[in-house]
Amino acid sequence: MAIESIDDNQADKSQSSDVSLLMTGLGPSSEDYYPTVVINALLKILKDPSLGQQYQPATQAIVNIFQALQLKMVPFLPQIMPVYLSIMQSGTVLNLDFYFEKMGFLVLIVKLHIRPYLADLLQLVKDNWSHTKLQERIIGLVESIAVALDGEFKAYLPNLLQSFLAVFDTDPSEKHEASNRVLHAFVKFGSNIEEYMHLVIPVLVKTFEKPDAPMSLRKSAITTIGILAKKVNFSDYASRIIHPFARILALPGPELRMPTMDALCPLMLQMGQDYVNFIPMIKKVLTRARISHAMYDQLVSRLLKREPLPSDLPGIGDDRYVIMADVPQAESGIRKLPVNQASLRRTWDTQTRSIKDDWADWIRRLCLEMLKETPSHALRACADMANSYHPLARELFNAAFVSCWGELSDQCQEELADALVIGLTASNISPEIIQILLNLAEFMEHDDKPLPIDIRTLGQYAAKSHAFAKALHYKELEFLTEPSTDAIEQLIGINNNLQQPDAAAGILTHAQLHHDFELKEAWYERLQRWEDALVAYERKQLENPNDLTLT
Image 1 (cartoon, rainbow, N blue to C red):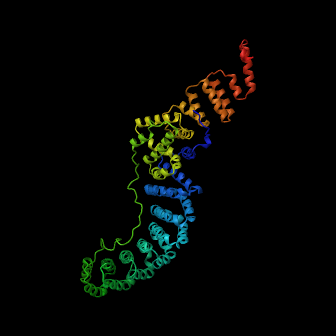
Image 2 (image 1 turned 135 degrees about the vertical axis):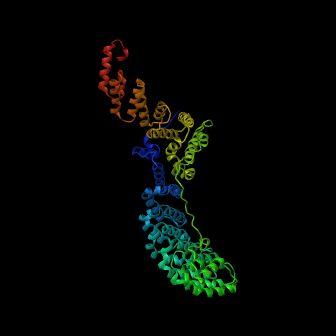
Image 3 (image 1 turned 90 degrees about the vertical axis):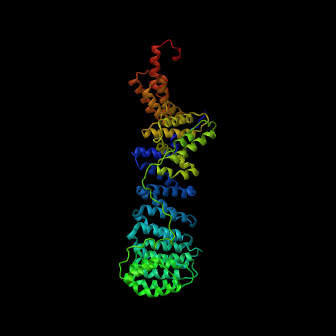
């Protein structure tokens, strides 16, 4: 078999990342190991200008990991956020829609931990606000920030509110998605918005009284007032709300009547006896329009009898008319994902593999299947992206392999090791695949989970593929367990290839001191130790004067 040269320093970059982590003491037994390997791989993609097409899949994978692992991912924010923000700062309208949406998801997950990056995020909001196609996503991000910061968000409202209110006049979309999103944001702002109600109420009233506005938007504006009545003190604005509500109830058509009645109920609950002054006016409108509302009638009756009102109104003044954001749901508990051993067995099977293309397909499928079946949330989050961008599957192969290995039965482990040997020794397999398998074996050994593969086999194919550092390691192990002159000769050859003559000489010294080997003259020649070689030849000639080969 002709095997091309692949030097160790040309091996997969994954070897330097996952093995180096093991060297620092961070291994697969640590819950931080797999997220660290994955985030390093994804950030490497996001930092590569030539891989722009992979930025969105990589970002989605990161969001998926945060969604699965929640606050356990907070320590990775200092690595992730500068890269993410840099991509957004140089983004286009077309792709910023995606990035603003995903950033909103991240903010909801990490909550107050987003503080160090708020200045940059709000600058992005300001810089891109003029793009009307982005406004809905941008508003969604601000809403997420409000939810994450809770009371701390109040300090940021003055710089945002005027832009939000202006949306109702500038929203060009037919369905007014951005306007609806602002209404939803007001609800999420909660009590933070209270001191700005003198600005908000007129805009809400104008919106629901605007006859040419979409009916869904008018409903949402009314419902927003009902919801805010549960969170914000409306006492100074009661008249400015209730009189417009009366005008809406007097209009023909039923579309806005029930939302208005629903909104009046929490308003009445907040005002208490102060609402009594408005009862006659509303009653006149209800009678004329033949409107009935059981909850409203019940509350009015209690007010007039001076009976206590309920503390809450379940089902009244909820978000039913307000567009909700799609937010990632937290896992109830972070458990390992199940591994389908049968699916893995079908993938590593080598029976139908013979030609070079077969083996290329075999390693490709094995890399992907390990990611699909890994018990690690962080690794499995990359499966979709790896399916279309195979270099990621290659880079994460070692980590995915060891994560699955520990979940396999003894029989499956044995079968998998046998399949790897068949692949390693196949006559038509490429040098690249041999390197992948050798890297895997080295990785597993570093993790104290050596594969049940004969070290002589590993050493033989490491040497054939010119991975001399690996070949040296396996040959040293072989020499320590079974010392032989053949092993010494091979060790000398490998050290020479690595340009380590001193190490090769050390082999001779070790062999002479510990194993009582007779040193061969040719070994000195290979080490270019000419004087030692001459002395050895002369000594041997004295011992064997009739040996013509020594003359």
